[in-house]
Image (cartoon, rainbow, N blue to C red):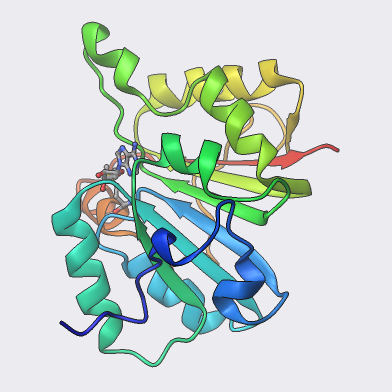
Length: 202
Ligand SMILES: C[S@@+](CC[C@H](N)C(=O)[O-])C[C@H]1O[C@@H](n2cnc3c(N)ncnc32)[C@H](O)[C@@H]1O
């Protein structure tokens, strides 16, 4: 079976992974968590060849589709990883690996009894912060106002991250970003979208 060059196979490396071995360079690296159909990463990787991009997705069908989609393109700076990001942030990467992290439309789990499944919580942010460089950026997008409020509060409470946007801490438009699949659907439904951008202070 042909193995796609877009797949990051962690079994090929000693953990934690040194991304300079993966990409053969020391360029800045960005991570997308829960990449869905992978189209955001394809666009951003094509437009930012001076960066390396890693995407992590837990659902195998989405992962396979994204890999297939990427194979139609000539892109040397993009790898997709099939894994639960909660494990990846603890086990897979060296501290201070990423200069930028995107979390686009994380599942909001709106029902009270399901909120425990939300990926963004204090523990996760603490593990994530370990693999982000000082002055690195986390960018989060969501249509879910209550989840956004809770993420804002959790990020502020870490004492590690500081909002770049002035109060109320979000904007409704970032024109330079590629649009994600979910973003497009929410835009068509004329839903308000919230974008957060935080910097890791040290
Ligand atoms: C609402 S979708 C958004 C997809 C894409 N980011 C977009 O904006 O079109 C959330 C994505 O996060 C993925 N996801 C949820 N939990 C995850 C986890 N623990 N690790 C990695 N991916 C996860 C889901 O499988 C899904 O593809």
